[in-house]
Image 1 (cartoon, rainbow, N blue to C red):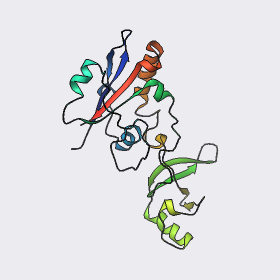
Image 2: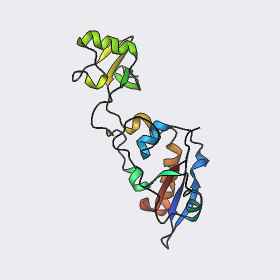
Image 3: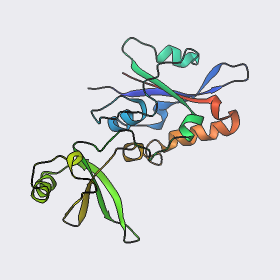
Length: 200
């Protein structure tokens, strides 16, 4: 089973009240627990220390449809963000204070020949074994000496400090949500467009 995400994009009308514009379910978002944790502080064991919009609760002035559908006893971990806040996000800013304990970044040659981050994965056993051979002791990625890397089978493995772009890139599945908010903000203003979410 597990939880699913629900929510809505709202706009603030001239009188100050909020109106539902788009149901979040219309975007067909699938369960992306790592993205949920980066964005809203709920979803997985990723270990994010500073989610972007961390479980802020349900605003007191939500639109009537949100109040009717988003405040049941079994719904939880409510949060929200205005377009002004989303537009100001540094998607490459760290959401943790140090390298992840178990994950590594995988760098491969990019189109220009230089190394580019290709993926972030759980450290494979063969990479941990290679690290033990190189460093002389059994160390997890966050314990590797500074600037260390493991070169194996054409890839370069390095410790990583998690960022929102790694798990909730703004141009992927959440892109249509941000695009809809951006378009509404062009009409109503950045502070007058709001995403409200919850889980259950």
